[in-house]
Amino acid sequence: MKTFVPDYFSVPTVLETTSFRLRPLGIRDVVKDYDAVMTSVEHLQKHIPPEVFHGVWPSPTMTMDDDLADLGWHQVEFKNRTSFTYTVMNLAETQCLGCVYIFPPRFTDADAEVFLWVRKSEFDRGLDSILFETVKLWMKSAWPFKKVAFPFRK
Image 1 (cartoon, rainbow, N blue to C red):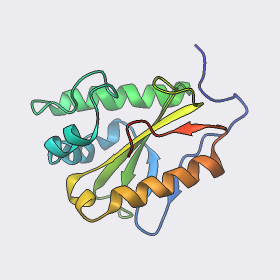
Image 2: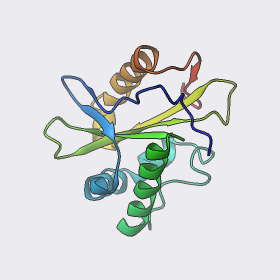
Image 3: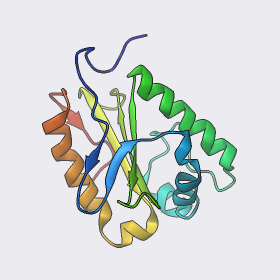
């Protein structure tokens, strides 16, 4: 299995700001992740093109077991260094605010493609643009990629 980053690269395990924390997404996050997704279904469908997750996501009929399976898959990919998914948590770790996905390129000639989302309530408070700017800087300062794309972002 080909890894996405060089073997010598130490993958970041946390990015903390005064407003939120990014850390690897895992199965232990299912309750909070499910809440963030299901309270924002229409918002997420509007902002995440179907191409990103191979179909319309999230489904309004998604179950917590479906979400658990997705989180397990992301956790395995992180461990195998083939893609990296981070949960965006409030600092108290009581609420999932969104997610950040760092994937091998599919839509561009970049070294990596990054997708991110925030729950509807946080989008309305302006977190999306703050997270986007923070992640752009993080990709430049902490990751080995020379060219990073944010497909479908305006």
